[in-house]
Amino acid sequence: MQVPQTGSSSCALSVVIPVYNEEAGLDALVARVTAATAAIFADRYELILINDGSKDRSWAKIRAHAERDPRIVAIDLARNHGHQLALTAGLHHVRGELVFVLDADLQDPPELLGPMLAKLSEGHDVVYGQRIKRHGETAFKRGSAALFYRMLGKLVDTHIPPDTGDFRLMTRRVVEQLNAMPERYRFIRGLVSFVGFSQVPFPYERDARFAGETNYPLRKMVALAIDAVTSFSVVPLRFASHLGMLFGLAGLVSLAGIVWVWMQGGTVQGWASLAALILIMGSVQLLVLGVFGEYLGRMYMEAKHRPLFIIAEVRRHPVAGIAAVPDDPAQSIAGSTGEAIRVAG
Ligand code: UDP
Ligand code: MG
Image (cartoon, rainbow, N blue to C red; front, side):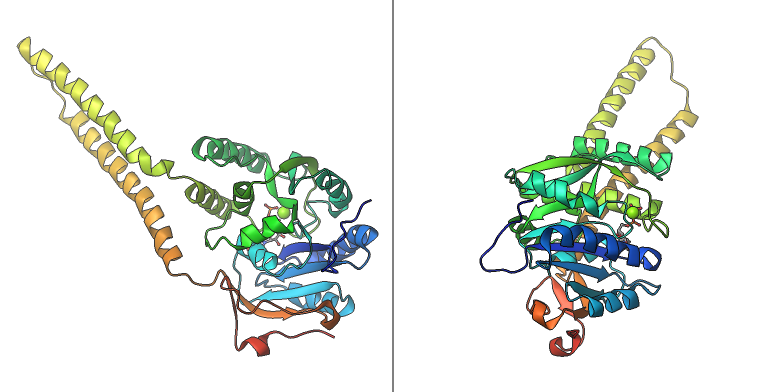
């Protein structure tokens, strides 16, 4: 296997994994990722584990791993930020020439690093995992995911490939572009597509969760879907004018009908239908207002320019170099900068 050689950096690969309540599977995760990565990169890689405000003992475990293995970088967020922002925090700390992103639950097999790397070295910038099979996921999850990607394809100009997650291998220049995007509502797989360069799929079978249970209940999936649509499309804002035209047309047609009946000497009955129509129109107007409100609220939140994530602590082995990028506007480090960055050793 050809490992990318770089003159300036001794870190060829950064593996980035967000972790939320993954205590049960964490040891297996570290073991499998370390085996798969060290086989190719020896010690020229780093494994960045981001604790996203877990309520279980995930952080204690991550810290212990970082103390034992200098290649492991432990990042603790000040609270739960959600998967996409936790991943963002990790991406802001990468030092490798290549970046490999996967989930903590071993649904994305780390052993695919080799074949994905081979694909990348054909001259691409992104090799993204595309799920051809999902083990251990409910029919509802599979069905809703399929529907979501179909809808997204219709609404969005950027081509976001279907059936992908955040499992991907990227070059550093892609990650630098991602890190330069200041937006708060992040649908990272969409942002990666937006960056461009050469991106190719890597079909794989998604395993069942190794341990624990999904942290993406329906509520979070719907939130992610709304983030995806609103981040990449303003088409829903145009629904208002389309609906307006449609109802206007319907009104004209029914008016013509009423006039026609009146000219024949009759009258059109139907106060009940009128009441129903008023209710329908009222609901349509409120729905459209809701869509406007969704975009307006997002503009409001973005306009605040709050940091995307708050870091409580970064633990990086001294020989592995600096601890963090303190003046990065995307992040805030709790307490005074020097105090918060502790270096394991
Ligand atoms: N995750 C996170 N913060 C959260 C929820 C999830 O960092 O608030 C992590 C989680 O530990 C895992 C990844 O995001 O590494 C994907 O979550 P999960 O496996 O629960 O999602 P699913 O695979 O069921 O869609
Ligand atoms: Mg999962």
